[in-house]
Image: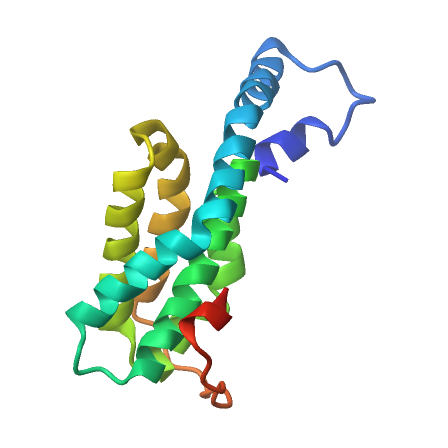
Length: 172
């Protein structure tokens, strides 16, 4: 749950919510239908959106082995899903909290930072062409948080076991 909202409900025995606290709650509740609709749209259009991104990524990196592109696409899909969940609960920190433990290390271990950077730009471009500026304003904090994680310089972790190859359709 959004930390600001969670804090509102922590100690009801002390006092009623103040006007500014009620305003925060009211703003969240009134924006929830829009967030839910956008989340459902993202969920329903994920395959189409990400297939377009995958095609563009493959055109941009024709020399890169397909397995490496798939690895980046898998991370990109998870990043979009976490950004969507963060948008739904209005907590961009969710992306950082959930992805920080593995996303930078995966990008470093498999040397996909440049591919991931291009992937995030393709995702932003594809989504901006498909969704309204207001919807992108809801989703962008999460997307940007994931992009910053991969762009940051972190010490590489031990590489994980190789994931078996699947077709792109199998990723969804």
